[in-house]
Image 1: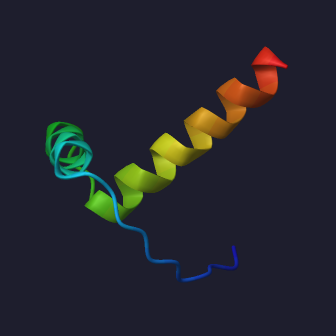
Image 2 (image 1 turned 135 degrees about the vertical axis):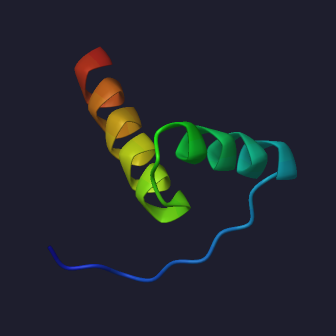
Length: 48
């Protein structure tokens, strides 16, 4: 899979929630963000 580097600013509370989820699922933060984005995109496509 090709990858692209993108930088975003997100609220601290969102970052902390992602950190906690990643730790609970034994994932890296980067991997957790990818999983969450993929799930959100899939859910959005399915709702339309």
